[in-house]
Image 1 (spheres, rainbow over the protein chains, first blue to last red):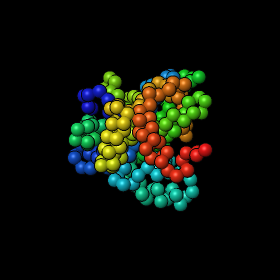
Image 2 (cartoon, rainbow over the protein chains, first blue to last red):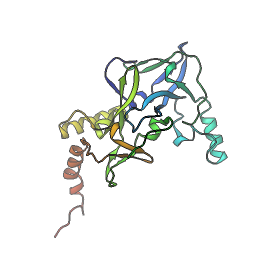
Image 3 (tube, rainbow over the protein chains, first blue to last red):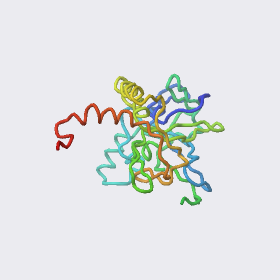
Image 4 (tube, chains in turn orange, purple):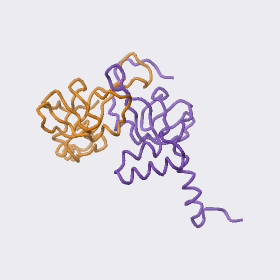
Length: 116
Length: 130
């Protein structure tokens, strides 16, 4: 992780993601955050994972997170556009190089993306 | 107002927060979520302050236009940091982001005032002519 104070969500979004092998996995499409059970409010929303998508596939208003929602035609189109979209747990992120603008993973494959 | 969570609340930050309207308890519109700071705490990244105004939006836009926006805003508002609202002041995240009745230290006003003075009020019909 970076060593200096704070970064921005907008900076992390869109960064290229590389597998441990050095092969490209895609780009950061979204950042999954979690407020743990037993807490109150939103002061401790911790980053718990990244949604990684192939370049240019966009977010598509959340249909990519839950492919069972909406009309089947939408689900089919979104499924095709996002067939390479996946999820990586934050524990599988080896390093975010903020200066170079690259996310390095410890793994060589993405998990299936599920709705939060 | 908020209660203790009985289970984890998981959100996708871009989808749930970015570009959402910020409202206070009276329904007043305070601005949009233009970016969110990421703080490092104990080796974890945590959502820090909500950032709003051209100083936060500019870096998210295409480089020439974004830089121009930030430069103009900074010049007109004599600021170098965007307005911010701590995530601790957020009470609900729905289709909008509801915050406690704290007025954000808005960084948008310099550009807005300049636009109103130099552009909007000069448009035909902008002022009531008695």
